[in-house]
Image (cartoon, rainbow, N blue to C red; front, side):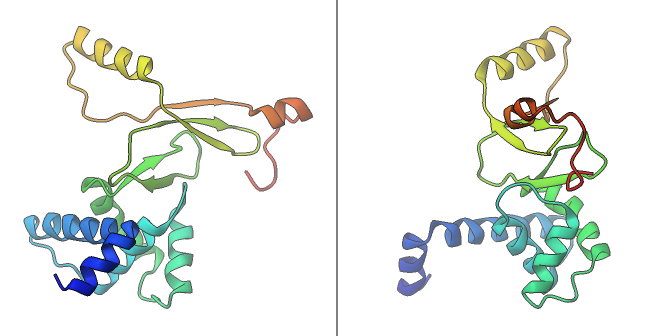
Length: 171
């Protein structure tokens, strides 16, 4: 590594994290005898740059904004299982019709409160729930490998306003 690169990574933790993610992804691809293409690299970069929860079409739109026109919906859908398998992304908001994803690489596990009216998502961590899940799995001789926890309801804003039906933006 050159001194300039070391200096930029020390001052830019996001760039260092992206480099580690790309190395991790490339290693996983090579184990499956797959190559790291420019399009795959661009998809990883765009996905890891996304803050919050996103749908595949959001990722495609972001790629096109940055001039990566080879990344069609079909291409992203083909790369998506690789991103999930390697732990770079995780599915989230599975309860709705439209699936969303979020960055999982080097992030703490968390769960979600999802407003079924406006679509607001609140991330939370609650150790007693995590402990209970492990205890339940152990009691049933079940090995947990992953979980996605969503609690559905109405957020405070929707409750106070009396809204009960999904907004047009949510549908």
